[in-house]
Length: 291
Image (cartoon, rainbow, N blue to C red; front, side, top):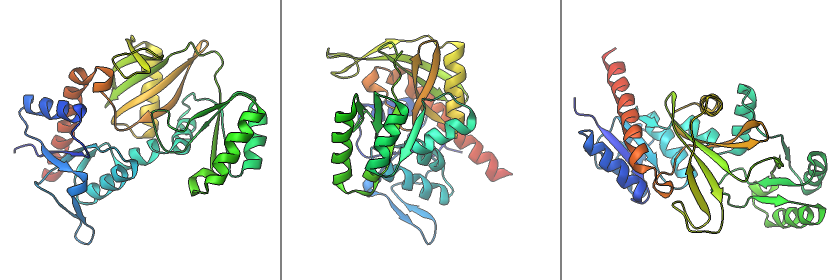
């Protein structure tokens, strides 16, 4: 049976082009599904799209488009990479933290508050500096390090006055004082950590972007253990696990379910692994049909 692999996308960026090329090298012509042109018939649980697919790799840029598309594909009997449950958890920092805690994955101390007043009390409890993060979003958007009371009061009052429902939820996390000025991103495909890199923020041009340098990182036993535990905690699949060194310990911060490759110079290495994993999911789909 010809493998029916779909790639759901919003824009054909370098990452998506790398996946298309990798699929072709593995003998598969992927069906390209632009999210904005795909229709889901909820009554009949079917997908109205340019071609039939049995497994789809999600590559959209909007979290809620991704989440709902994955859910609707699954209802139509299509395997997805990643699952809607994984997207739901990874797309929400509170749910990710709960998943880490339930699975015993080391993560920074975190508190949640629902008003400006209790947020300031929570910050006093955690101690300055404190990280204030939005529940959704990535690439550090709207993340603030609050160094003292004046900064905290100004940022929280501003957030409070914005009036959107999610701005009344304060996700506050301890700032790790012993971090060495770099983060670790570990890439998990299935049950394997296939790659890890150091990400160093700076102001020099780099292979990632204008503010980040990428350096090879050996996959140590500790990185493998914590990255796999974090990936399993959120449901597994194709994931990028962000880790931070805090003195002599390693902690998990969050998990990305739509991973970036090209900006980090890793597309050539990672894209074939992702395609192979998706095709293995399709093979499992075929087995289920036979059974």
